Length: 177
Image 1 (tube, one colour):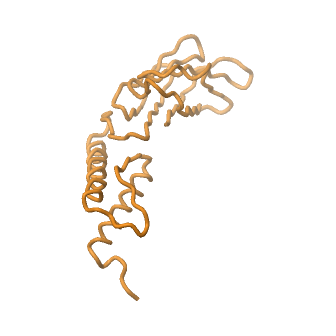
Image 2 (cartoon, rainbow, N blue to C red; image 1 turned 180 degrees about the horizontal axis):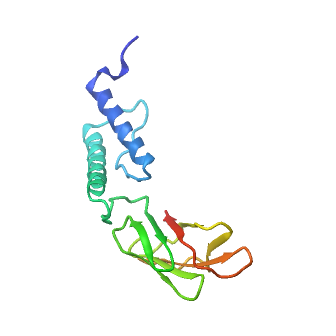
């Protein structure tokens, strides 16, 4: 049987595919400048441009891994992510792919306001909000419509127990898009 990955070209392509799959596995979107079609020759300049984009993304990921606890921005055009673990005192742990701050404040009992600075977009607001309370029988929901497009994403959260009483649990929120 002929070895498919014997040639340097095929080994490079395999390496690129593996890097893309690894980036996808950790939820990181990388925009490649060039797409290739079957049975069409690839130009070296276009292949190199794709590898350059991957190198930038990998370098950014390595920087994040080597600097835990910092909110360094990732160079991504397609994916943004923010999450926070918070309670009635404030944010316990957080991440914001824009590099901005994450804050959580409590108003009246069971009412939180969570802000992801710089995670938003001045044109779009089609992100997904997910909430989880860490106490059995407590439900937390975002309140109101998605805010108008803005550089910051601010989410109003209301938490209540199964009797409808407003409570202050520990909550996990994620914002994806």
